[in-house]
Image 1 (cartoon, rainbow, N blue to C red):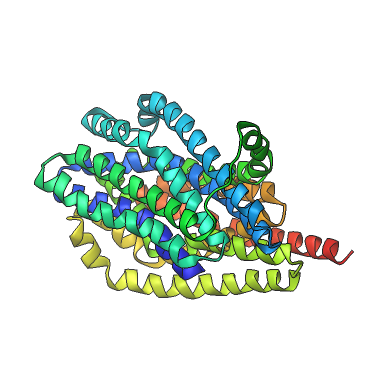
Image 2 (cartoon, one colour; image 1 turned 60 degrees about the horizontal axis):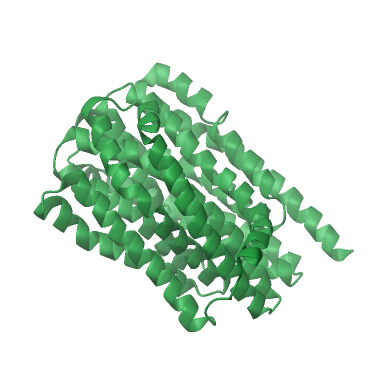
Length: 427
């Protein structure tokens, strides 16, 4: 589940990495930095999709575990409808606030104009991405890891085909990148809905009333999960603002490192989505020994993956920097990330595993508190202090250091939840 889910999740982030790569080939520092600022905004919109998919996936997996397939179909349909509506409303709100948001991140002049234009074209496609992410979560809740993976793989394939045509051949620059994003998100939505209809009995027939009533149980899980997911882009936005003070080259380097992270560690990002349905099914079957086993195996798995990927990043750091035509401080930040700094991502992996356990064991608010703690008091003081001493490099190091404390705390708190639920299951 983790491996196949990671391929699908990495495909979402490969989309951003491909955009960054092709834009960097234009060798226009303003456009490259603009993609960096835009990425911080898009992280917010993606966080809503991830959070909502967590809630829908958890409820569908419980219905599957209880062998109530009619309820599973109904939950999936209600979740998709809510996701589309919520995505449209959220996209409209973000679109209106874009000038203020881009300015808040520290973008100025031509860079701000480029970022604003790119986002205004791409943001309205948010409902398509929401449908795709929720649909992929529904497929994983049924245990269909392969089809869940292919949802976003096809999105990446479409983007990889459209990007060079629209950005380079048609010479549309950031406009071409945004239009390619539209095509990619349309493919993601279509590839999510088709297998649900074809292989899992299609969709239910909810009314406006049943969808309204379904919002309560879905958002009981998704609400805290969305708040949990939002902590990451908030922390990233703060770091972006800090790095902006060191110039466009620093922002470009941070943006490249930020896009390399989920691609390199996509398996770790996928743990929350992949482990969640497994925990949900075993919770539904009252098999708490298996829940505990999944928790510890996931932590071991995260450690092995991060060590292996960090070694590959270190060996490939020169080639990666060359691919992005990185020079000066941009290159320095890429080298910093592709060295010992990437090893500290293990502690973020601990948080992901702990959050997955809490979200599916009725303690979603605990995940929210841990994530917000990690990306506020676990980021800002360290990034600011080390930034004063070591500049942009210090900001990135400080961002990573705070994860050590909160990763250990998250595991301890999650184990308390597992023990509490296990004690209740025995009663």
